[in-house]
Amino acid sequence: MPLPFVTADREDRVQAAQSVTLAEADRDLWRRPYRPGPWRVGGGALLLLLASYVLFSALVIALAGSLPSAAVCAGCGVLVIVLAVRLLRAGVWVSSHGLRQAGLLRTTTLRWAEVGVVRTVQRPVRWLGMPRTVQGQALVLYPGARPGNGGAGSEAENRRILLTDHNADFLPRRPGFERAADVIESWAAESRG
Image (cartoon, rainbow, N blue to C red; front, top):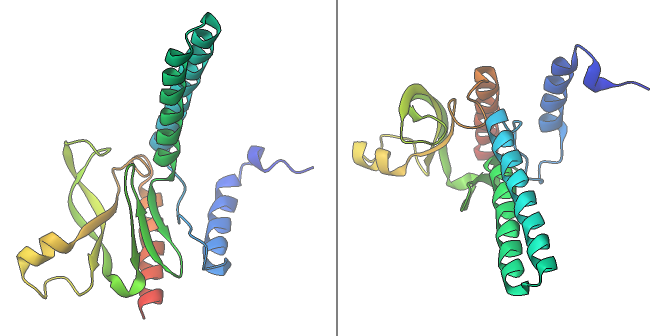
């Protein structure tokens, strides 16, 4: 019985499987063309750990006889679980239908006809979504038309940052950011043209 998780060449197999999966997969399914990063997975794990403590406390409160308080506590636990799932599903998803940017509280979907240009640019980016900015790379979406056609003001208003190399998915993995940016740019080029 092969155990792929203990082999030394697992990273090579994962990269090969990802490229084959995106190229030959069912293009109608929504796919994230990269793996969630360690910061995102760690944050989700901590939220789920917190939810388990909250739900256990709801059980203790219910056994103590205070059912309304237990219901409030259980509701908070369920809310933390939903937040953890949303955190893990956040990112950029692609399919033949369009490009979807899922955030913690909001999801935006654009058809490929609405996507103008997707390109990687050097610019100050937010570090793990916090107010602090550092110099890095960002995958930027210019919807509708090529950037610069409507003046500098409209370019700044219309552009949308999809990914950065300092977000929760790519902070320690710069090659992963470059690979994901290339895949999303190629999906945009194929689907628009």
